[in-house]
Length: 422
Image 1 (cartoon, rainbow, N blue to C red):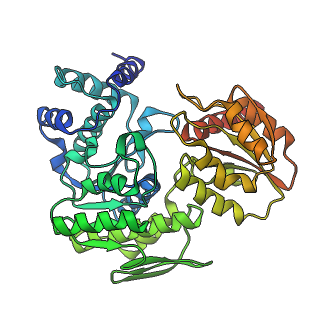
Image 2 (cartoon, rainbow, N blue to C red):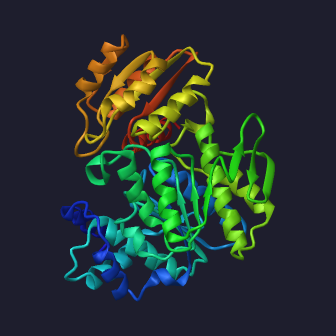
C-alpha cells in the first residue's frame, strides 16, 4: 500500500458516515494497546475557536520544551496536517504504515473515518514519545471519538448553533453534548458563553466536581492596543499575538489559562514560553492576510458565530469596499452566514466550495441581490477569485469566506498563480 492507496482506503471509510458513539474507538484503542495512556492529554471542544486554541496551546508547550502532539480537523490542503508533532505533520510514509497497521487491527470494527484517524493520531503520538497531546473534538464532545481518553485538562470554547442535525436544535442541547468531555475532578477552562449554554456547562462541572475556570470571571484578555492576560495568579502585558481579531485574543486567553492549570499540575512553563508561544502560533485560513499584504483576506467562517466575528473584524478595517468570494457547504444555514457580513460587502462573487454538497451559487446571488449588492455567479472558486481580483480597486479588499474548503481552494489558487508568474 502506498500513500495514495492509504488515502483511498481512509476516505472509503466515509461510507460508514458520521457515527457518534464510543464503542468502536474504545475497542480499537484496546487492540492498539491503549496508546492514549502514555502522555498527558488536553481535550478541546466548542463550536468556534477550537483549532486556534489548540494551536496556541501547542505552541506554548513547544516553547516550554515539551514534545507536543496536535490533532485537529479538517485539514486545509493535506490529510497529514491533521496529525502534528512539534509543528511537523505526520509523514506520508508514516501515515501509510499506520493505515496498514490499523486496517489489520480494526478487522470486524465498522470504524468511521474519524474514529480511524483518531486512533492513528494517538498511535503516532505514542511512537513519537510526546509529553502532551492536544486533541480537538471533531463534532460535539460526549460521543465524539476523541472522548475515549482520560485528559489532564479540558477546554470548551464559545458555543453557538452548528451541526444541529446531530447535536440538537437548542443551545442548551448543543452545550450538553459539548459538556460531555468534562471528566470527574478534571479542570475545565470555559470561554465566554451565552447564558443558556453556560448554565449547562456549570451544572455538568458541578456534578463532576470539576474545577471550572471561566473567561470573564476567573481570567480575561486585556484588550486595546496592548494585549495582555490577567487572572488565575498570572498577569502578562505587552503580548504581540500573531493571530488577528478580538475573538482570537479571547481564544489566546483560553490557551494561556490552560497553561496556568498545567503549571499548577507540575508542568514547567516559563513566562518566556507563554509569550513566545502566543507570538509564534500560526493558524492559516483564519483571518489570514495572504502573504501579509492587506489585499486578500481569507477566513474559514462557516457558521453564524464565525460570520459575526469576521464581521466585527471587517468593521474595524479602513477600506472603501469588500469584494466577497462566497461559497458555503450544503448543510449550512445560508442567511445566518450572509446576514452579519453583507452590510460590509460591496460586491458578491458566488461559487461552490470543493465539497460534495454545496449551496447553489444562484441562491447566494439571490440573497445578495435582495440586499442591494452587485452579484455574479461562478462555477469554480478559482474563477470567482480571479474575477474579484481583476475588479478590485486600490482601496478595496477581496474577502474569501464561507467554508474552510473554500479557503483552501483560494490558497492553492493563489500559490499556483505566484509560482507560475515567478
